Image (tube, rainbow, N blue to C red):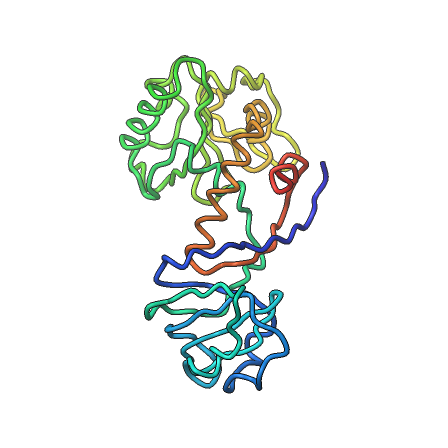
Length: 273
């Protein structure tokens, strides 16, 4: 599939959290006390809270058909309560305007949670130990992906495929660096990608080589694509789980809407599920 821009709003806020994000109508227009007697009852009332408005703080808020119709003192907002109104007692919890993230890759962020990750600045030993543990967890032959390594943290031992070969001789491994512009692949991954000492640098990329002309496993820019395209794509179930992880994370921090900066058909299907 091609590139798409997707908008999605997180709903069904959980009032058990101490911070309750909310997107409903024009928040900042509701700076004053509640309006006059309503024509019809509100569908939702948030009461006994600390509700942030441009002029300070309010106690209660009423919503009808996704629009904030009243915000102010408890008594004034109570006029919007009817037999069918859902009332949430905030018990002092804070309500703020929902945040919109203008550029995010939620599915990718979720997928990274199941990859072989180590802290930025990790030594070569930490990288090896982490990869070894990932191999034990995933089994012989499985692809190991993740990151993020930093050349400076390797000290006198520069990044080299042999570092990975020692702990993953039977698993193809490719790890991103901290910039995302370079990768480190082991010998098995280079073999599957058909990269040898005779492979020319691709357009827009560099296959780093040692003094004898052999590939070190460090792949710059587009050179990493030669290995990356052999990594099996996520299953539909994995894509959906990754998206749901990100949605929950964003909601917990008050991000109630966002712009997905780049999707494909697999991600679009997850949104539609």
